[in-house]
Image (tube, rainbow, N blue to C red):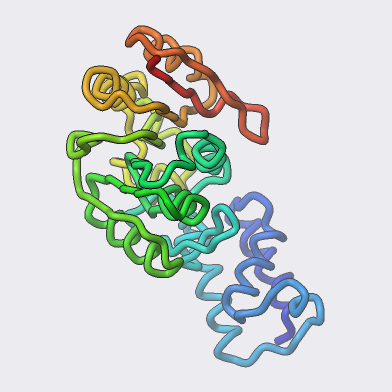
Length: 274
């Protein structure tokens, strides 16, 4: 079966299952199964029976609302491909802002600067930061052993010098110049109403931020203010949460700033203790 015909059939199946952007996803799954890029896809090659069966297997999984990144086992972040699967949060493009802010900070350029990624998940932030700042000492922390397995795999894959530690927030950190955190920030009561790809498939421990979504944010900010005193703490937050996060930071004596992602959403709240 030719690639474009296979994509057309896949699009119909995905659309019937309620998948948004079924044409885009159909092409993505065909290319993933066939191991071809976009240029090769548009040449409309004939795919053998094995590749055709593989496409329909991937489409069937996606029709069950399994995240596309789990289906293919890959997600791009910061121009790098990361291995992902059940048990680890799928990297989002808005999280790249954490990497951007860390790389732009003057402290980050010093030899031996310690940068800690709290809630490292797949390791996408830690690995990207290590690649951007090869002289820094990067540590990734997560409470999930499954997530840390993916993080370690991704660090090896990209030859990134990152030390991963299993721990609860920053309790296992002695000192750090920069702390980056994409913590769970969805209110407990809101999780089940999210799209099935998130609510049914992604690990709840990576989503659930407590009653108002700020439980872990409050704990981390307090620890940074009282013990770690980093030059920079950068917190990713959800839509409409930046004002509250800023208040939490300022209540702990820090100077706060808010940074927007490419979609114009107030996405990262930074704290500096002078």
